[in-house]
Length: 168
Image 1 (cartoon, rainbow, N blue to C red):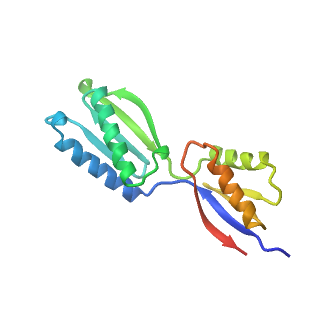
Image 2: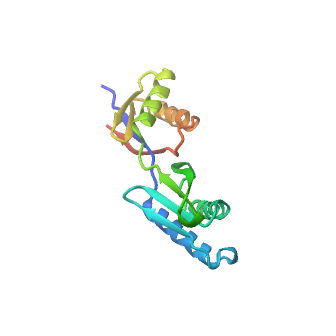
Image 3: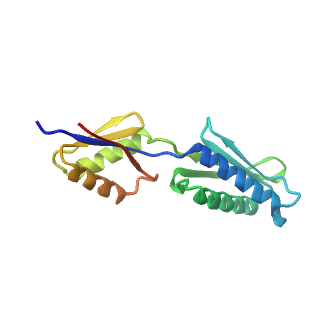
């Protein structure tokens, strides 16, 4: 009987790196001349998986978002996993925006991944949803390499990670 190999498809961010990026962005904003004396802040909530950006107006909010994105890129946090919400008006004419952090595949994303694999009609490749990951298995390692290439060619709205390789 042929042995099967498998790997997991998931997504996520390193919250320590997100925390460091938020700290660096806060430090840069407090030192910038155009933000002197203004009430601006980044608030990271790892339990809720979101970042709240507060600024006196929408223009400053956009500048803060740009700074935060540059710090995230430097820290190798995938920007695709950051989902900025609508800009809301806050107290005293300020503006606020919540940025959701996608950590783990949602059930819809997992179903989309399985659907793409089924539509490709790859023989001997099985995909199973296991919580916030999709386990892909096949007797052929070449087929698994093809699956990775296929999934990288599609846009699921987040950066996919391929890991937990196993051979039985």
